Amino acid sequence: MYVGIDCGTQGTKVVILDSEKGQLIGEGYSAHELISLANGRREQEVSWWTDALIAAFKTAVSAAGIATSSIKGIGISGQQHGLVLLNKAGEALRPAKLWCDTESTAENNELLEQLGGAQASLDRLGLVIAPGYTVSKLLWTKRHFPEVFEQIEHILLPHDYLNYWFTGECCADYGDASGTGYFDIRSRKWDEALLNHIDDNSGRLVKALPRLLEAHDAAGVVRPEIAALLGLSDNVQVASGGGDNMMGAIGTGNIREGIITMSLGTSGTVYAHSDSPLVSPNAGVAAFCSSANGWLPLICTMNLTSASSAVQKLFKLDIAQFNEELAKSPIGAEGVVMLPFLNGERVPSLPQASASILGLNSLNMTTANLCRAVVEGTTFGLRYGLDLLREAGLQGDSIRLIGGGSKSAIWRQIVADTMNAKVVCPVSGEAAALGGAIQAAWCVTGESIDSLCERCVSVDESSEVTPVAENVAAYEKAYQAYREALTKVHGLS
Image 1: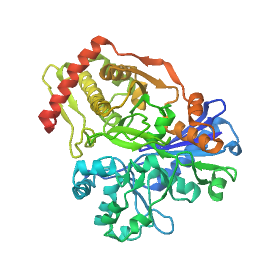
Image 2: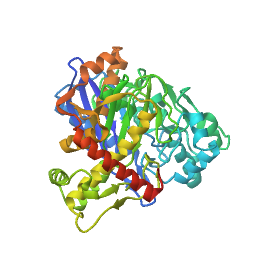
Image 3: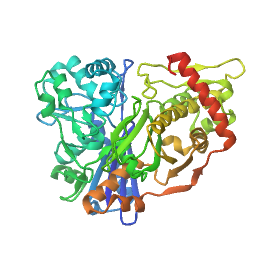
Image 4: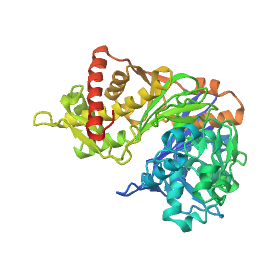
C-alpha cells in the first residue's frame, strides 16, 4: 500500500493505492484557509497543511479499511512556486507565500530587468520569470521583512516542506525546483548567481538551498514521532515528490510524448511530457522539468473554476443549476465576451489585470449568457496557451482532462470543440495525489514507472467526447472575438 498526498490551494487530499491491483482503495480530504488581501497577497500557514494532512490521512485509512502497518511509502504533491522559509530550529519564519500571490510583482519586474529582460531570462534559465514564481518572493521578503530574511536557514517549496515534516530532510526534486525562477532547466542546476544578487553576495540563500533528488530517489524515512502520530511502521520511505502539475502528469499517465493533460481546477494548466527541454520564445510557456526524469512544458492560467465559481455564487446557483444555465446559452453567448482575470493573469501575461465583460446589451444580458461567457472565457485562456505550446513543438492530439471542471459533461464538450481534440477523463480525478502514490511505489519497489502507470492509471471511456465539426467552426469564431477583446482591452495581439 502506498500513500499519495496532494497539498493544494484549497485543501489537502490523501489517497491509498494498492499498487499490485492498480486501484485506489481509500481517499480523504481536508480544507485549508487562505490569507487573501486586496493587494495581491495570498498566503497560508504551514501548520494548516500539516493539520489538514493528518485529518485527510485518517479519513483515507479508515475508508481503505487497512492497517497502517501495510503502508510502505509516501509520495507528496504540492502547489508549485510557494515560498517556505525556516529558521535554524526548523520553524516557519512567516506564512508561506503561494503561487497565486502577486504582491511581489514589482520585485519580479526588477529581477527581470536585472537579468536583461525576457529574452535574457529565457536564454539563461530556459523560462521567463513571472510574478508568482518563488524568486521574486525572496527579494520581497528582504525588502518588507528584513528581520525574517536575516534568519533564513532553509528555503523550501510547499511539497519540500511536507517532505521535511515527515523526514527531517531538506531536499527538492528537479520538477518542482524548475518552477522557482532560480533554476536552469537545461542544465538542471540552481542559478546561484541570481540568489547571490538578491542577498548581496552574502551566500546565505545558496547555503539555504535544499539538495536535489532524482525523481525515483527517496527523500528519507518517516521520523519516529510522525510515524507514531500516524500509526506507521518505522521504515516507511518518503519519495522525492514534486509539484502538483508534475505529479498530475504521472497520475494521468503523461510520462511519454503524445498525451496532453489539461486541468480545470482553481487555476488552469496544460502540459505534456517531453524527452528534452522544450523552450519556447514566448514568455507564457514554462519549460519545466518533470518528476519522471524528463521535462514538462506547461502553461498556467490563474483563473479557471475560481472564476466560474464567482459567477455561480453571484447568481446563487448550485453546480447543477449553473450547468443548466450554461446549456441554455448558445456558443458565443450571444456576443457576450468575458476576460475572466479576477486574480490577474499569467497566460496571457497580465498580472495586474482585472476582469472585463464586453458586448453586453439589453437583449443578451442574461444569467445563461454570463454563465456561458465565464466558461468560454476561461477555456479560451487555455486554448491561447495550448496554441503557444503547439507553436513550440508540442505533440499530442488527445487530452486527458482533470480538475473539478472536468466533471461537467457540457464543459468537456466545450473543451473538445475549442481545442479540436478528443477529450477523456481518467478514472481517478485525484491525479496529483495518485501520481504521488505511484511515484512512491516506483521509489520503494524499483518497478518501472511505465508499468506502474499502465496498471494504476485508467481512463473513463464513458467520459470521452470528440469535437463536433459544426461546433469547432463556431468556437473558432467565438475564440477570435476573445482575441479581439484582448487587443481592445489590454493591447495584446
